[in-house]
Length: 60
Image (cartoon, rainbow, N blue to C red; front, side, top):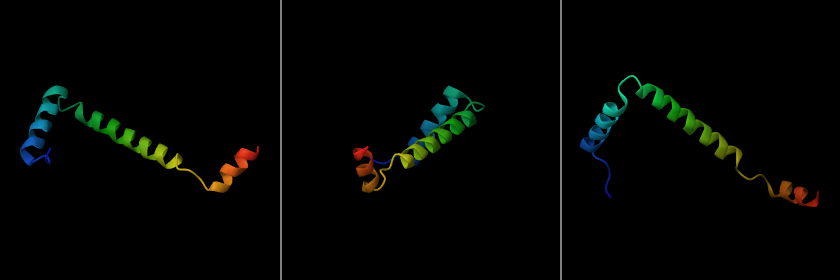
């Protein structure tokens, strides 16, 4: 599959506007933005710490 061109993007945007209406789109984008922000925060918190902490947990 190739990249999306300008025409394809405009068609997708037009379909979204027809389905949801102009008033609902800002709410959808706000929800999408907060979801992405939450995902980034969760991914940041999930990163493993130093190996020393893992060894200390195994001893307990």
